[in-house]
Image (cartoon, rainbow, N blue to C red; front, side, top):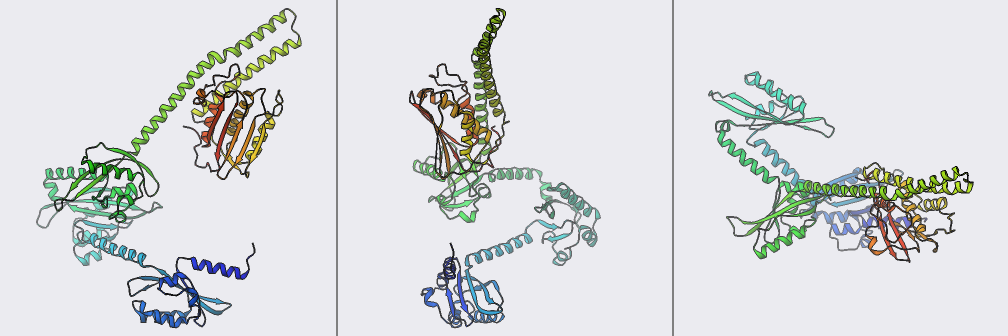
Length: 638
């Protein structure tokens, strides 16, 4: 399609009308040429954009100046920008009503001639409030860190001080002096034993070399002659490129703890219990199902920070199966019974990860209020669930292997006995004819063909057994790539099914718009040969079978239909099991392995199989393959 200049202008006008920010375009005389609806909305202008075209922008700026916190500064800054005619990016403007805007300015210069300018405004109020909150939080945490009741220091990679809080160094002047120096400088300045600096340096090197947290107990003598114990800890922090960024050192006076070991043990036990509780995700709701508390484990489990969900109803949280949990709590409230067993649910966090969690909840009330609250505890049992699932897979695999073993014994004892008997009898007959000097060419041809036929059948059986063995042991590689499925089908039909003894041929029908399909050639060759050969084998003397390819929007279906003996309904459920054959096949040769292997290969492609059949009317097998990529598919069956 060819666009004219006017068409492009209309398209640009349409785009500027739809962008999520306010746009104003004025010419070099400061006459308004264009303004979008968002500009009128942002500045509460009760006119349509088209009605503003031609306005004097200088007068409009003066009229709008009272909207801003400092109207005079607003006008002076506009004047300054217009004089410089240089681009301005994301300039912050504060409005009188508390809102905050970002402003961009772009001069329009064509062939060194100034033609006008574009002003762009964004509502920055919410983002600005978050930024202010972040800065306030930063100051708040810096204040906490500076005044925290524990020695805290930060070191660079050379063990030089980057920061020390008031507890570590009380004197403000010395705390400033120590920045850029190390503990050797400090002990020298203080006139203390150099072994203190040596021990700290040894710990520093240890945590840096081992790249993990470490600690030691430091023993000092106070000016009063008392022994004082400090627990010194260091923790290294590394950048994404594995380069050391800094080391945090922190310590605390543990003298009283050392002198009261029993009290320490009790406290450690309590701390261990608290840690165990906090390792479980906890959320507390009121009687209206509004969230009033979550712990840090809840955020790590579900991806929702406390600030994002406190005050909201629990059913507003996008967590899978949360409605089932609400229903359980509602039933417990109505029956006033909270002694039910712990239940397991599958949940999905905000990032799409799925976990299995064991859930329990209890009601409680506080001393200050009689209001009932509900504490809900989430324990991650994903590993246990997956372990059970893997165990079930192993059991199922063992079951399949046992079935294969049993079937193999049956094949060896029955299916192979007949061809071996045929081979033996043909060989004996030829031997007898030869001894009687009656072995002519026709007899040799007849018995040789019988032997070759039976050998080929046994060879085919062994190949299928070996193929199943390779699949079960995970040695079959899955190598799909986009291909022309129609051509692939036609090649198979041409090579194997154009000169059948009874003269029949496969009738091919193609529907829809042909597309490339991703498939593994070896596996698809086995799938197609199996369903096509079965269609001919079980419909001898009947109409030509039909193969239909139907290309749809998201998938392609391969349907093979014959008019043969059909499959009894009772046999359909075992159709794809190893060594399973329909009860009406009589003397038609077969091992019961072909469809079993085909099922494996369709599973590799994540394809679906449908089968419909009626006795003496025929069978229809339909395979559905999607056009999706298999880049993440498994290379083998486990």
